[in-house]
Each structure stands twice: as C-alpha cells, then as structure tokens.
View 1 (cartoon, rainbow, N blue to C red):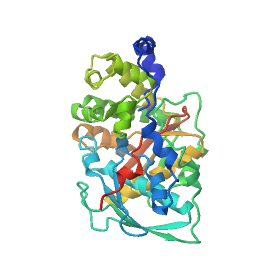
View 2 (view 1 turned 135 degrees about the horizontal axis):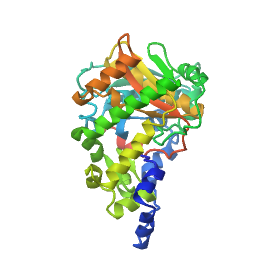
View 3 (view 1 turned 120 degrees about the vertical axis):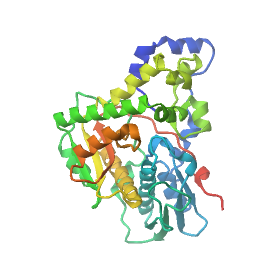
View 4 (view 1 turned 45 degrees about the vertical axis):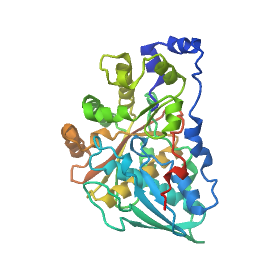
Length: 381
C-alpha cells in the first residue's frame, strides 16, 4: 500500500529514519524478490506461460492474486480460484475476487494476441454458484495460432499499469474528453459511466470517504486488511500477496515499534491516525470518477466486468491518468448496506449492479505491486 509519505512523515516525524539508521539497521532495501515477476514478464518460450506471465500482473482486490492455472493439456489453460485467497469479511459473495479473475483472463488474452494467438474462453465450464466460489474451474482457454489475430494496442500499457493509491493533484483537472476516450475501451454489454463535473466529484468524494470510514470502523472488515499487512521487505518477499508496506519509511517505523499490526488496530495510536489521514487523502483528492455496471449480477457478468475494468485501467494509463478502485462502497456486508444502496441509486437508478467504481486524476508515479512468480501459481497435476 502506497500510503502517502508526506502525510505520514508530517504526523510521525522524519527523525524516525535517522533513529533507525543509528541502530545500524539497513532501511533502504526493496522487496526485489517480490517484484521480480515484473521483469520476468514475457521471458517464457511456451506461449501460454508467456501470456500468463503478463496476466499475473493484473489488478485484483487486496492484491490477493486469487488465481491458479492448470497447464497439463497441450495448448490449453484452465483457471481456478485459489480458495485460500478469499476475503470473507469484505467480499463475502466473492464478487470482487471474481472481478479480479476477469482482469487476469483479459490480460492473458491481450498478451496472447500480441504473439498472434487467439484465446477461446469457456467460462465456468462445470457450472458455478452465485453465493460463493468453489473448486470448479473458472474458465477453460484454448490457445490457437491465428494469422488473422490482431494485436490489442492496450498491450503496450500492461507493464506501466498501476492502481494508484497516492493523492491526486487537485490543481490539475481532468478534461471531459478523457471520459469519451475511456468509454471506447469498453465492450458492449457493460455500462460505462463517468463524471468530472465538480458537483459530482464532491458528492462521490463524500460517499466514498464515508464507505471507507465504515470499513475501517467495522472491526472484522478492518482486521481482515490488517491481517494482510506485509510490513518490510522481508515480509513482502516471503509472502508477496496482500497489502505492501515496504520501503525505508515503513521499515524504520516497524523497527522502532511505531508501525505494527498492533499499533494499526489501536485507535489511539499515531499509526492508526496517520493511516486514516492518508487513505482519506485519496478519496478526498479524486478529480473525477468512473464506474462499470451490468444489468444482472451473475458470475459471468462479474468476469466480464473484470475484463473491462482492466481495459479501462490500461486506457487511463495510456492517457497519463491515475486510477484507483474505490470498492468499499460496493461491498456486500451488513454495515455497508446503506452506502451500497445510496451509490446504486446514484449510479444505477434504473437497476443493475455497479461492479466497479474508481477515482481518476493525475498522481505521482508509483512502484509495481509485489507478485508471486508464475511457478507458484501453476497447479500440481
């Protein structure tokens, strides 16, 4: 998680790094092992592994990387959900996890097309349950070399794509024409919405701020996130899924005991207050919002929403814009009911399900998120 360094340092004090350095502890290390998959993308000879090495860089909730693939049949990929990577508190119906799997499939398809391969997908070939994901396959994909397969121009932005979790520059407005360009990346069957109108921005800032506060103030949902904190390069390298707190600042705060899982859950601690300030700085600096909705809310709808979400993420990258999902207000647990219905009345007044909502704006460049290597995501057969 890229909590804004400026705000955290202002609240906690820059002397922490100096104090940590005085102990002889090295605080400049980066989780190089955990970000190595970014450098390995595209280096595989097998066209399926080549495409998958890009797919595993796809956005996904809480960076859980909830995918496992079976390559036991020639020219085929079978995708499964890793049931150990679910988010039962914030995503009890596994809807957001399914969207993340859709992102994975779309990046796989885009990367395969770059090499001249057509990917024919069969979604949920053995059926599905709308209440939860299970051990049945999510998708079956067949790779076929096809001279008529055209590369997707969005491929060129796969390596630069990020979910930007830093505050945006509130002095730079987003031109309304950007929304029209982003909508061109969306397939028929998914409803694209967006606004850079000042009144809409103010209203959606308030709604997303409120939803984030609900998630943090609901003990079980907040604890789910805290349990996924990876603090310092050693933890991130050892377990490169979850919420990344690496870099000199967090290494130092952790070493001095100012930032731990315990302080993060202590509502009287400086770490807790600084964390709130930082994440609210994100919702409160949105310079526009975009959203995707579907008429129904089947598992297939959720996969398609994910496929289109990563496309719009790649399109924002192409425009030089930052994009961050603001999924809290769309979560389906009791404490979020009021906010959930409010946002649906606002963004889908004629019915349907808002599958994704995000803020757009101009933000700083951010580092790639940690990833498990491809080999860790291959099912043993």
